[in-house]
Length: 76
Figure 1: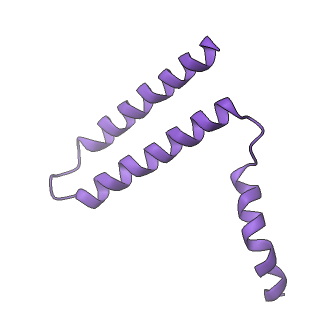
Figure 2 (figure 1 turned 60 degrees about the vertical axis):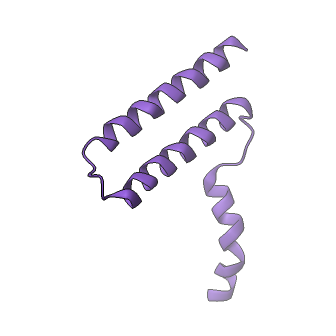
């Protein structure tokens, strides 16, 4: 249990540093870029924590296969 909490805290700290380092070179007017940096990092953080606590989740590749398999048969 404590290992997962420690790993969660470590992921949060690393995500903070990623945003901090990516944020510095951006100018004040680059609001869309800042939102993208925070959004992508937050998505990675949430999915990492989710996989830490539930490792039996399907991979992103499997999810994309479920979405696009019906379309593949239509295109053939």
